[in-house]
Length: 191
Image (cartoon, rainbow, N blue to C red):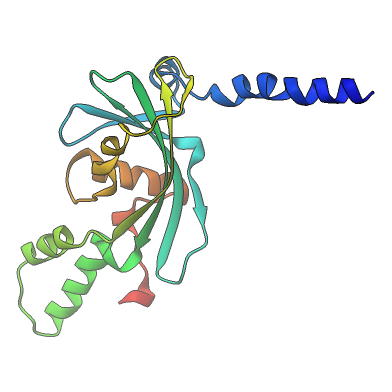
């Protein structure tokens, strides 16, 4: 009995490791509606958001938080980086909220142009992110251990800005979680 137990313990890693290491392949990312594609600003990176991984989590009042897995592919590279991210959305920084604040101030006599709202939004989009974990996979879906070359892959999705596909991706993630785009979010408590 002891030999059987030791044999099972010895075989267990060989049985479980292939199951664990099979994550996702490039063809799965491209061929499934579960993954929504967004190109980077530089246009040589492609990101796939796993729409089924989007999970709202508890946050302080005036904030909404979401965890999501984003897969990054770089042209000419032979790996996929799976990045688990946590986004924090500040409700008082939604575009609709900023426009409402501007209108309130305008009715009180402060005369500033609408372009000031746009500049304010560009200066602080109201979304921050935190990287929770990174895993690497070959294009065929096998796990890779050396993550040294993957660091630069996801830096531009952690540096958030109010432009392009990246901001569209952030709004799409928010809509999937809460049923409304972040920039359409409005709270009378915040006025």
